[in-house]
Image 1 (cartoon, rainbow, N blue to C red):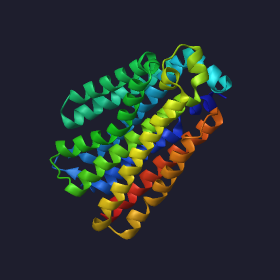
Image 2 (cartoon, one colour):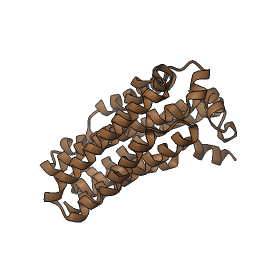
Image 3 (cartoon, helix red, strand yellow):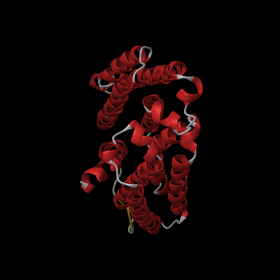
Image 4 (cartoon, rainbow, N blue to C red):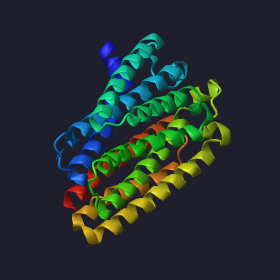
Length: 298
């Protein structure tokens, strides 16, 4: 029973997506030589950063669930949850592990600055769970930025070791970061609409509560439309540089985007928002698959 609740809070699929995305960038996009010089192992640094990133993400989920215990009792099934004391213990253990991982990274790169990156990330996610989430849009932006900046940490490793990243790969990374940010923003707003009942009961000021569900749907539609433009630009830009199959891999994302833009205009019920949230997650997964295909072909 405890294990089932632990899996529920860990959001294993989300953690898996984070790890797979970073692995695709490392192994397929960067094609980095893993042993560099006489002393430094780039592969070791990368693996530690992936583990540390997963730890930071997990910590964000746990502390968010801690502050949302009462709200989620209304919005979700309370029987699936650990209690607050268990969540705090888990959060403490996870942060100790993450801190040790960040120390190991600092030792390998001979730079203690990464400790501050870890502490700032943990601090902002704690602040999001305790305060910023209640303010609506700013909390959504922070979560979406964290999702997209996961890639930047790997870029910094390349820069640290003095390894060149081709212009095509740099542009691809920027496209993908925009893709992750826009899809995350869309999903965060959809989840706010989905959870409006519990959020309203506890005085949160999310966008649907501030301006209403109908107007929030318009914003979701705008983010999805911008995401559609990014995907079409991605396909158009990559077509002359890769095979036709690469651009075709983006078409399912474009199709789902069109579908969601039409669906969101008519969405009103909690179950509708739940389905749209799942479809956006499918779009994220398809984006990762497309990134892997383009990275492999380039």
